[in-house]
Each structure stands twice: as C-alpha cells, then as structure tokens.
Image (cartoon, rainbow, N blue to C red):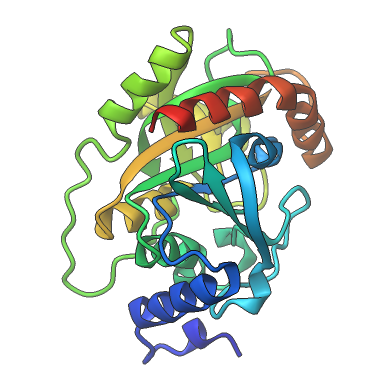
Length: 272
C-alpha cells in the first residue's frame, strides 16, 4: 500500500522522508531546481548537464509506476554547468489514474523537501489558438483548474496570483523571444475533450487543454516554489482541427519536436 493512500498520513512528512531517501540514493544532499518532463520533453535531461545518479522512482517512498507511455519512471540527479543540481522527474502520476491528488503532487512536494526553489512543469497538450502548429512550445501564463479538486487540505489558503512566474517567463523569452504564451486548462481526463468542451475552455479564457500540471503548480506554490510552466502543442484541440485525436499523435508530435524543444529547455534552465 502506498502510504499516501492512508488519509491519516501526513503527505508532507512522506515527502520529507522521500527527500531523505533521494539524497541517500543519489549522494546529493540538496537539489536547487526540479523539472517534471512531460510528453515530448524527456530527452531534455540528456542536455542539462552531467547525470550524477538515476533512481527508479518506485524505490522512493510515495512514488508510483507511471501509467503513461512516454515517461521514464525515473528520478535523475543532474549537475548543471553552474554547479547547481537539478532533479529531473520522469515519474508523473496523472490525476486520471485514480490514485488521488496526494500522489499526483507527491513529486513536487518531494522536490521542495529536497531543497528545490524552482519547479519547471512541462506537458504535451492541445492548442486552441489555430495558428499554433503541432510542435510549438508555449509558455503557460495562468491556468484554469477543471478537475474540481485541489492538493490543498483543510483551511489552507494560498494566493495563486502570478502562479506561473512572470520573472521566469521573462527569462525564457530572453532565450527565445518568439515564445508565445497562453492559459492552460486542466481537464480530468483520460478522454480527450469534446469540441464543445474546447469551445467552453476558449470562452472562459483558455488557450491550451490538457490533463496535468495545474494541480502540481498549486502544490508547488503552497511549498513556496517559483513555477515555470511550458506546454508542447502536440495537436490542435478537438473541433479546432478536423482530425481525430490519438495518444499516438501526441507521442509522434513530441518525437518530431524533440530536438528543438529539448535544446530550448536546456538553454532556459541554464539561465534559471
């Protein structure tokens, strides 16, 4: 049984224990930055710096085997050129897997407990702006949480103004001035959105639709981390494109865009 499934357990204490196990497994006492690499972004880990250690995520308390193709299932410690250490999370638990929101955000809380002050969240997502072509990287400027859930428990009130740091987005634009941005809508999944749901997202101010990130970003803010969010537009959302949607398309778009977006992300991380 995963300890996070016990409602009486303290998720922050489990994250602290996970961070201790991570330090012991990697030999790195503190990580300065953490990255969750979603669909299409995984190869960026190879470009960030020197891999110090790589650990199967299931060897660390609270982590689950990834239920989605395209995720490595590992936690990797990388020494950056600056001398800082990055924790690369290839073991994302998605909300639609049904394990509960505590498990969804455990990786973020573990990263915070490990010392990370910056959380980079990436994903593959559908685009609503019709000039975005598959393979376009986009900065997340804000989100709309359509899961009807939250990682915050009890009377915990957290300000989400500038959740996706304007400072970090400015740094990203210094690296690539052409980067566009948009509001990310997290749906529950795992089904893709209907054309009507996409139009709803557009009407309420959304530009990107997906099934991750928002809950993780909230947990990162609660933990005092600064968040940079980036989406790879893997397809135009339902009704924006006449084509049927498929996970195979998502994976292929990520593979096709990989050389460009991974180099971009590595260059951005150098500046953080």
